Length: 329
Ligand SMILES: NC(=O)c1ccc[n+]([C@@H]2O[C@H](COP(=O)([O-])OP(=O)(O)OC[C@H]3O[C@@H](n4cnc5c(N)ncnc54)[C@H](O)[C@@H]3O)[C@@H](O)[C@H]2O)c1
Image 1 (cartoon, rainbow, N blue to C red):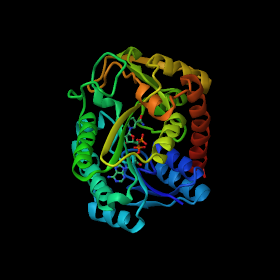
Image 2 (spheres, helix red, strand yellow):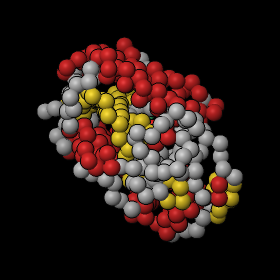
Image 3 (cartoon, rainbow, N blue to C red):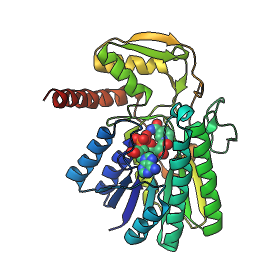
C-alpha cells in the first residue's frame, strides 16, 4: 500500500483530504500541532473522527521542529507528502506576524528538508499555496501572472513557500506541485472565515459586519471539489526536477452578498447587516483561471455556492447543537 504524510491533517482541508486518501487506498499519517489560532476543540474533533472512522493517527508535531519532522519522515519513508499545515488568515498577521514566519517560512523549509532527505524515494511533494499571492488585480488569474505585489504578510509567506520550493526542485530534483486554493468552504470548516462567522452571527441574532458593503467578489470553492483535485494530483508521480503550480478555484466569482443570501436561505433566518468600509489586506476580487488544472487533471470544480452552503449549513447546525448540549451537560 502506498503511503502519504499529510501535514495540517487536523485542519479543515487536511481533514477532508485524509478521509478521501484513505478511501483511495493510501496509508495515511497525519501531522498537526493543534495550535489555538481557532478553537483547538474543532481540530481535536476532526482528529478524533479521523481516528475513529478511518484509523488515521494525527501526530501532535510542529512542522517547524525540523529535527522531529525529518525523524518522522525518515522513519515512515512515505511515497508522497501532502503539505497543508500553515498559519492561514490575512488579518491575524497584523498582530501575530511571527506565527507566519514560524509555520509558513520555517515550517515550509522543514518540509522541504524532510522531502529532500527522502531523495528518489519521494514520488511527489504536493503543497498548499494561496490565491492571495495574486494581490489586487483584474481576473481571471492565471498561474503565469506576475505575483510580486502581495496585499498581506500571509500572501507574502505563501509566495515565499513557492519560491523556496522552486529552489529545492532546482537544487535537489524534488518533484513538487503547489496549489493556489481559492476561498475553500464546507462542513467542518474554519471558524475564522467569513462564511462561518456569518453563520454564527445569523444564528445568534448578532449584526453581520459586511465589509465594502459585500461588493468584494470571491471565487468560492467547495471542499469536495478541492479534495477531488488533491486526490488526482497526489496519485500522480511527475518527473523529478518538476515544479508546477495550479489554481484550484470555482472559476465563478460571486459577491459576498450572494454568500449572505445563500446562508439566510439554508439557515432559514435573516441576517442583520452592518455595512462597513473595505478592510486593509482584503482584495476586491479573486477569480481562478483553471484551464491548466483541467488540461493536466481533467477536472474543474463543479459545486454551486448555494448547494455547497446548504451542505455546510446542515453540518453547522448539527455541530452547533452538539456544542450547546455538551456545554449544558
Ligand atoms: N481554506 C482556504 O480557503 C484556503 C485558501 C487558500 C490557501 N489555503 C491553504 O490551505 C492549507 C490548509 O488550509 P485550511 O483551510 O485547512 O486551514 P486550517 O487552519 O484549518 O488548517 C491548517 C492546519 O495546520 C496546522 N498547523 C499550523 N501551523 C502548524 C505547524 N507549525 N505545525 C503543525 N501544524 C500546523 C493547524 O493547527 C491547522 O490544523 C493552508 O496551507 C492554507 O494556507 C486555504
